[in-house]
Length: 165
Image 1 (tube, rainbow, N blue to C red):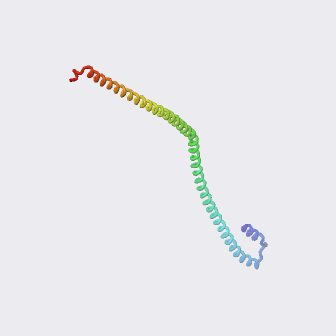
Image 2 (image 1 turned 60 degrees about the vertical axis):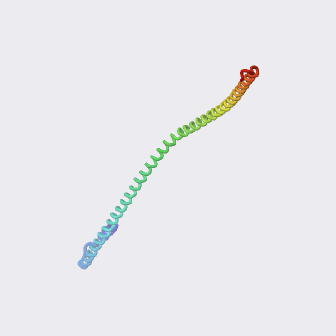
Image 3 (image 1 turned 90 degrees about the vertical axis):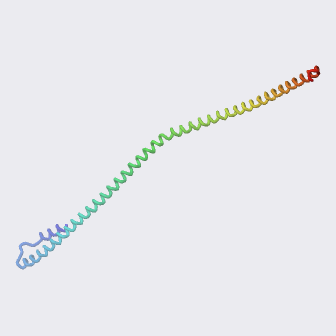
């Protein structure tokens, strides 16, 4: 815009120039050259400012792109974690069912073992009882036989006193 203003100002000069006006014009052209230099310097400064702004914006874009890539990587990692979790959750009911099945089987086996121990204990007591009665009966039979034998010898001695001497 400043260029356009400078051009419009130079275009609005009155023509033809007079000699006194020519001196003013020459002095004005030196001032115009200074204005042009100033305008050129301002344009150059604006251009450098734009270049710096572009470089700054490119740096921001690169930084954002770097962060976007990091976020993308993190999202991929989270996705993998969710997939692993889904597999675990899918397999978990099977494992829980297996554990539940094993617990039920253990409980049933424990119940059967308890029944068998009760029967063995009862049988053992019963055997002990029968062994005790058989031992008592054998002892009585032996006592009776011994008494019979002793009585028979006593009676035999009593009937035959000569044999005893």
